[in-house]
Amino acid sequence: MMSGALTRIEALGTQLQKTWTEHAFAPEAFIELCTTALAQARLEQHLSAGQILAEIAGRAALPEDPPVENRVVDEQLTLFRCPEFVIQVLVWLDGITDIHDHRLSGAYVALEGERIEAQYRFFCDEQLDESIRIGRIETVALERVRPGQIRPFTPGADYLHAVFHLHHPSVTLAIRAPRLDVDAGFNYHRPGIAVRGKADARVRQRIQALQTLHLAGYAEQGPALEQALLEAQPLELYLLLNHFRGIYSQRLPELRALLSRLRERRGPWVNTLARSFAERTRMLQIRGLRQAERDVNFRLALALILHAQTLDDVEGARAPEVLSALQLIAEQVPELRADVLRLTTG
Image (cartoon, rainbow, N blue to C red; front, side, top):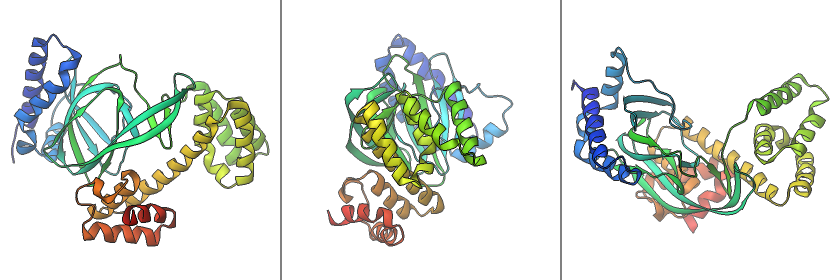
């Protein structure tokens, strides 16, 4: 077995810190410096994810690992830390990401596993507050990223992406520096809503109380939930309705009446909010199908359904195995049949 995985990574980090020092830690230089450093190091030719994790398991100590941003990975381990940036190994087992932007910059190299990276653009029509924006989402490009390929982390809302990992596991070595000065930190949901922030203590308590009312079968649950939704500010409304949308999916007349009252009180953006939950339900269904099936062609078919406009958007999408997987999905999952037809007949 090869040895010294962590030594190589520490050498990479030390040299990159020195190089960035020579550029006076200029933020605009960091992405190119990371890309060059990863290309020169060729770590994917010398290291394996298993080797890195085995060395971590036998190591007495590693740098502390406070999160740089909201975690979207199954495992995130910091291998090198200096005041300016971190080098991390990111491991996905059965995850896909929402469309999101970054409050960081840097670059990553795919160590193991292929992934579909989809790039998007968000056009803001209305900013409700600092946490929610309404607009429209457009696809920019799709790419099949293979082991050894290097891609940037570009900070800010001008660069949105989503990642659909095709293999189990999929492993990335990432160099990341925080960029808290940029306007970012949003997750984006079709047809066009951007949300930043999590529930604060008050909202968490409200959700807990409403959930307990529901689980216990108390009659007060329905009126209390409706009142909470009607009184909520935009972010709280999003969080509450998202958390309890499963309840209303079984009470469609109540949902339609509630949405009508919310539109009267909050405005037409509530329509976009409601449609975004339908898209979230669709994504969760695709996520579940992906977790149940590890065949790469089947997973690629799901990635196409979620992100592609045509089969020509992604290399290998017209392979017979992928077309067969799409046909199987159309036969077994009625909710996704229209997406398959759109891809295969458009």
